[in-house]
Length: 87
Image: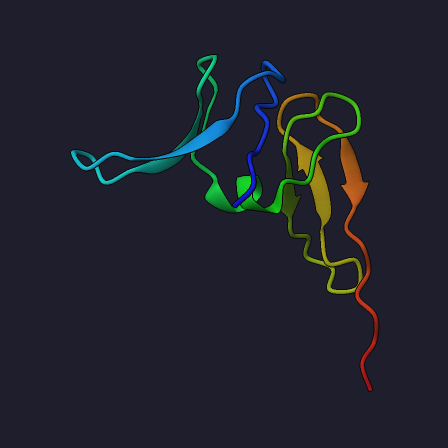
């Protein structure tokens, strides 16, 4: 896996930490105190265009739209790309 830059300091790289005592797995920055326990969000590496934090996928009840991206840092929202119909 390629190096993933920290969204908080934009200088450090995120390192996967396996805590054997608690059984937790999370990403932590090697330069600052940033920590993210949502592994899927970090692996997708989709960033907010306004603040560079990770965007989470929020599912909606409407099946047509499918969901939207949501930034937990600044509140930015964007529609999730629509799926192409397969025949």
